[in-house]
Length: 64
Image 1 (spheres, helix red, strand yellow):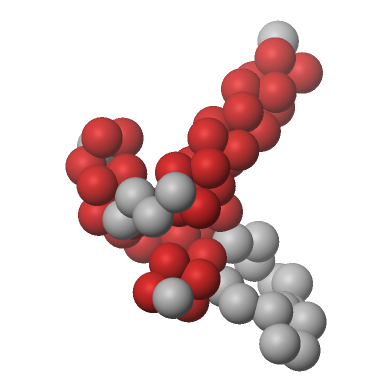
Image 2: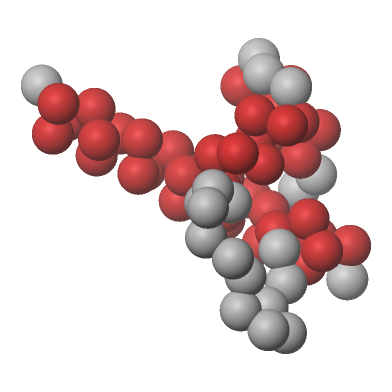
């Protein structure tokens, strides 16, 4: 059961990343999932992992 749950979480993250890449706003994604925007950010941006120099966050790339 844990493997299936981990796989479903991974699929969810990939779908969210795809939506962000296609310029869908975090607000829309959050509304569809029934969560706040902060929760969407936490789903796709790993914690405790510093960004590489020159690498954009999901929010920064969404603005460009």
